[in-house]
Image (tube, rainbow, N blue to C red):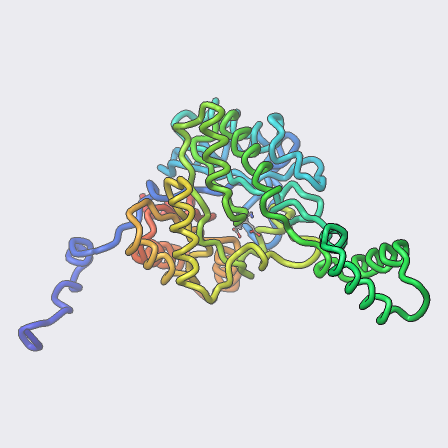
Length: 376
Ligand code: PBG
């Protein structure tokens, strides 16, 4: 049937009609509110690039969680700013760590609030990477030393031919390797996968012990869901679900978060473990893999620039799909609104609606409290 029998405007005439036929509805029941927890007492330190978002001491995080709960937001996700960082991210799996303390406090003082633990090492490592970092040159040297004699002989001949003069000594090799590493660390260090899994698993168990209702690994190591699932099960947490950041893209939209969580990588970037933003099919493989390893829910991140990935994930998989409206998405809206260039409230609801329409059941958003207020 065509015009004039069909007039699509008939159902747009009044708000009552529009509401009656609305296909997608927003509810605070789908929101997760991210909190950044820091040491101290009574601390509320605003993040420069995220007005309205704070580093909160445990007491203040409890207050925020309570406020969000009062507005109908059912869950918070916690990120930690530890007192100190080291190469092995000890603060991540310390039972008395900053996130673990906040979890215990929120679980005790805000009954009914779901607490999600973000499992990653980048907030706790001195170098800011999401896994254990090791130098590649010694690894190559070790591999060479283990190689068959003829391979070793050929390598030494090549080194001797390219060296300025004189015999190739072990000290010279070590010196030049150290100099090269200092000059360009991104070329000579790598984020290891398998050694990282053990620490992620420990972090997950420690968070579960502190009362986490859901474990959400965001590191993008291969095999982390299986490692975490096994560790949780082995420690009596068979009932704790895993929400995997399955399709997490290496994105410039995380910029403000790295200021908020003080987790910017000190050298290089995250492109060797987070996904290339150009790849939709690979995102589906990541999701499939995580589901095989035992993920109960999956996440796509960022949200607005990846709505097609959310939609495809929704179409292909029958598990709850979450999407993370990340720090850069928040910061852009806040900045434009601050200048009076956009209508903040309407943009917030429009972007959240589009993420739901694409197929996300759950939205992690820094607007959770504001949006909840607008919706009630
Ligand atoms: C930890 C992590 C990040 C975010 C969530 N978990 C940062 C990153 O990968 O660099 C980003 C969230 C945001 O930007 O709001 N790996």
